[in-house]
Length: 248
Image (cartoon, rainbow, N blue to C red; front, side):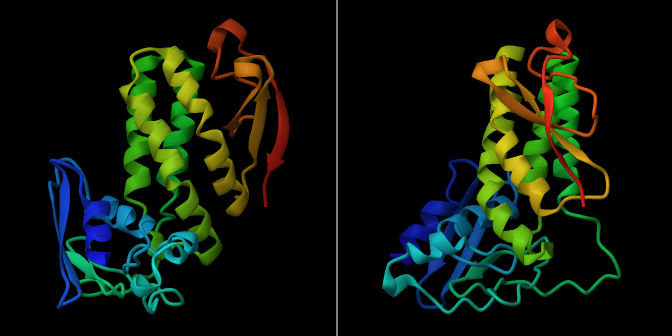
């Protein structure tokens, strides 16, 4: 049962697959590095209920495993990090790679996610579909490479909940051919992005803005207090109001 679940979670045709060794309790992951990353594969496996050194399964996903598949969660209290060229992980979450040496400081792994989101918002404000597509692709890529082992416990929990709700609309925007479709998908990003902002507010205010006209009422996040509407652009640039200011 575990073998079937792990291999199914890892598999994407033409991108990645996993071969689970029942006796060794080890999964060897093979992937096309031009199309995906090891992190993306391990994230899918985590969502299926299985921990690794990089990604811990959501508690709900682990609890949903059959009793015979539930294992001792060795990384639940003390996550570890694996090298970028790790080849796989075992059932108990032990990655097949040496640990990276500690560094004095690391950049915030979520910064690229926020930067790409605000670049996407600005592109839609400017009604620039090409720039919106590029920003959405950067957002999708940034979401997929976040090292959750570097996140604090509270942020880690939220991140596990918002990864797919961020990646899916971002991918849709990147694939969309017109602004109308891009803007509709962009509205879906607000809820997961807001959850992240509220979990890790910064010293610079983030504004939750509301447009009463778009789709019966839609929100977006902005670093600018002045209203610049991404759903209508120049057509109704100042339509909306600030609902909430989020800051430490």
